[in-house]
Length: 217
Ligand code: GRF
Picture: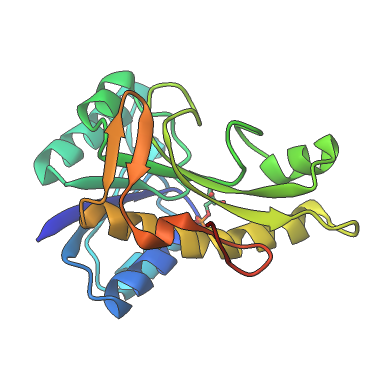
């Protein structure tokens, strides 16, 4: 049985989607901890309601930033999870920690990387005038929003879109995409060689999101 640690800082809607998929599909895995960098994150209550062990590593509890990083490194070392899942985790992790979990740490970013790194990705997409936007699940590397891409989901950008409308459309796809990628990981279908990801799964040749789900021939 593989083990997963999920890191959050906020709303926790991806966390909820992952918990739900794991139960519905009886994943061969256990979520051994949900770690939040904010005590007041709505995702904390959500994880508790699901009966998961929650650990709070709030900046306010540490005199210096380094203390929070060290506590996180200690927690991950203690759990030694097969997978570390960043789900709206708003801290930049120390390089050494990222390297320690190379190939086992994933993040979801609300854009089609390498476009629109960082924050306010939906506003960035509208300002750039792109017609297609989406979400990316990627391995975490020391460079922010930059690791090898495992899978992406697309959404159209519509003429009447605001950043909020676009965010909602992307988020709905995130909730389909992330659990799917995690299941591939648990089933050992994902290989990372020389910075390029290969996925051995029939549903990898699908373009999620738009229009409907496309099967790639
Ligand atoms: C999502 O848009 C995710 O792509 C980004 O942060 C947001 C987290 O949302 N990394 P939630 O906490 O999962 O609802």
